[in-house]
Image (cartoon, rainbow, N blue to C red; front, side, top):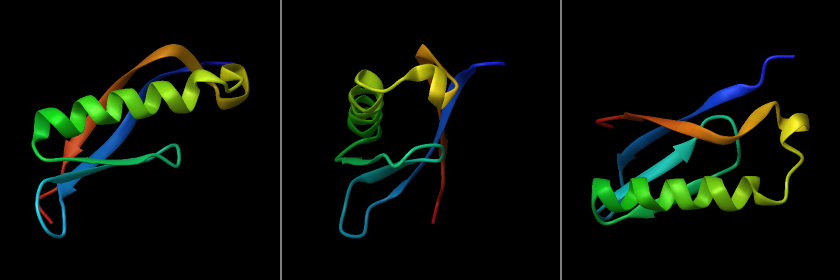
Length: 73
């Protein structure tokens, strides 16, 4: 079994202001006022989400990279 080394997310402008990041593989959604802040929040949210999970069941390594795509919508 190959473990996933990357987690993918889409970053898009928030409804009112700032940015929203939504993970494609897991139910993770976070926001921030700036792109730097939303990426920092996403990294923290992914770490917290994976903290108590059985990573082999999720097929993910212990510290995966986060690949974020910016959507202009």
